[in-house]
Length: 96
Image: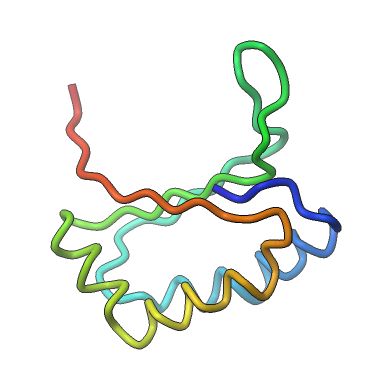
């Protein structure tokens, strides 16, 4: 989850042209989704500019993915463009 950057246009350009191709090389990545348009809460705008959801088979796959050279490169790249900060969360999910 990426906080609102100092330069949203520059963020979007870097994110989609540079960071996404780097992140798509992470081994075990099954699906990569991003929010479209403003991120909101029930009471109004959220503090986030963009939310990316990366799907893996399970928590073990996530750990292996981010331990890989490609995962390390993607994680390190975040500091290059995320002037509004970034929060990463890892979790298993289940369809209900």
